[in-house]
Amino acid sequence: MNHARQYLIDNGIKPSVQRIAIMKYLFEHRTHPTVDDIFHDLHDAIPTLSRTTVYNTLKLFAEKGAILSLTIDEKKVRFDGYKQRHAHFRCLECDEVFDISLDRDVEFPQEDGLRGFEAVETHVYHRGYCAECAKKKNFNNK
Image 1 (spheres, rainbow, N blue to C red):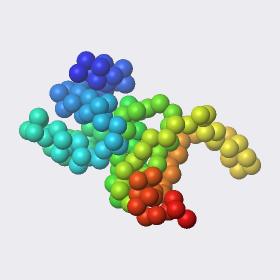
Image 2 (cartoon, rainbow, N blue to C red):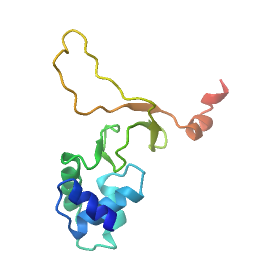
Image 3 (cartoon, rainbow, N blue to C red):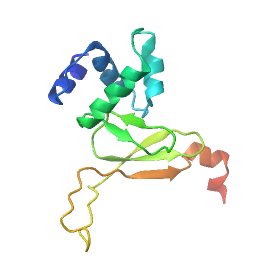
């Protein structure tokens, strides 16, 4: 719990029991959970926790740059406590989201019409079928 508490403080976020629990959850579950996933998994341990509290806490964390807010899924926002440089892959069949290592930074293009722009955030998303689902769909045997 101390690591999550200190991480929040380092990111300018006042720690509370709920905030620490949510941050700890994100550190321990690299599954790119949704608000509902986190609420469901933490509600028994923190009966006073509400979906609204989880939503507002995650929104605050993302605004402070403590976590990533992923819009790889058109229907629901997912959250990622892993802040090292990486991309994401979402399987269109099983709906899982996987981390993908990036061997270098993704550079913002400095072409005509974009000169003077300053990107502060870049997301690299891939969509398709994970190895298991591709196998089930027989994609790999073509």
